[in-house]
Amino acid sequence: MAVPSANEFHWQSLARLPSGRVYHTLSEVGGQMYMLGGCDAAGRPCPGLELYSPEGDRWISLPTMPTSRAGAAVAVLGKQILVVGGVGEDQSPLKVVEIYNTDEGRWRKRSSLREALMGISITVKDGRALAVGGMGSDLLPRTILQQYDLRKDVWALLPPMPTPRYDANTHLLGNKLYVAGGRQCKRPVKAFEVFDIETRSWTTLPMMPCKRSYGGVIWDTAGRLCLLGGLRQGGGHQSSKFTKNINIFDTNQGTWLKSEETVAMKTKRADFAAAFLRGRMVVAGGLGHEPSALDTVEAFHPLRKKWERLAPMTFSRCSASSIIIRDRLLVVGGVNQVPSSAHEILYVKEEEYL
Image 1 (cartoon, helix red, strand yellow):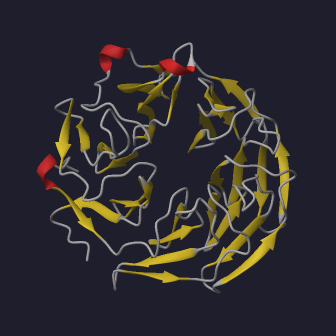
Image 2 (cartoon, rainbow, N blue to C red):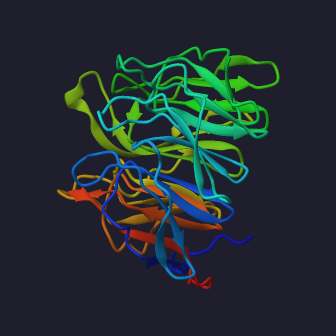
Image 3 (cartoon, rainbow, N blue to C red):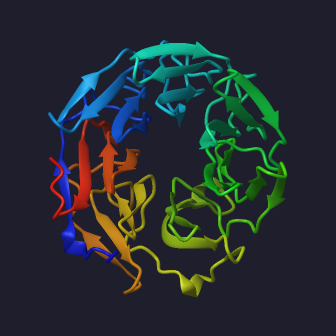
């Protein structure tokens, strides 16, 4: 499939959210997008569950979650959405687990976590959810790896990670679960480890080349991990600075590419939307050296080996949630001074969305 040129990408504004939202979680079931929880303009976690309907370009309110939460980990198990942990109304981590059946339109409580956790990373393998790490009520990161069996409604402990962390980036390739980066007590970590599901063992991989937080993370179709931009941290907190640098790990070779083999982004940015779309790495919005949130967008052309500017987003923002559905990038909510209700989609022009 040919890689689209920069001028073929097009932004379209869609129906705005019912209210400004940040730290919400997006999920796809059967090609439809669901938005769960998040914080409102007052910073309160909310219980909302909304479905976006492209047919009428509108948001449909569904039965609310039994528990208000923000930053929840979400896994799709068949036609059910499993919601795990996150931050509750008292700003503390949650142990409660709930599941929404999209066919029945009903919520059910499920077996709780062993302890309250926020910042869990979750993925699905063979119909089971794998939940990695998290931060407890004592604000310390965890090494925990746990697996949820929907049929038995049981959480089982698997061998723990070598490195405790929360907000890690996880990705499943075959029988291997990769866990990259994350944080410990607000500090970024460079640890990079992989869990072999068949042998139930952890292997330590070459560490990430630099400490960065609020960067973009993209796994491309060649099985490469791409770390983009973010805030690079030196010795002291004062030396944190925006970067446009990129690090790429090749899982086939088991090594990080040399810096001369990677191409830096055009713009230094952090806390932006990042995705692999139609064969191109795409970054949108975020924070940079401008006084307000960015609206700029760029995409990497793998054949020309350069970043190219795309049309900007209509609404500048950072901390947006994003998801790829049917080769289209949806960027939902976020922050621009206050929580944003903006909702827009990036797609290739020939493919009219609505």
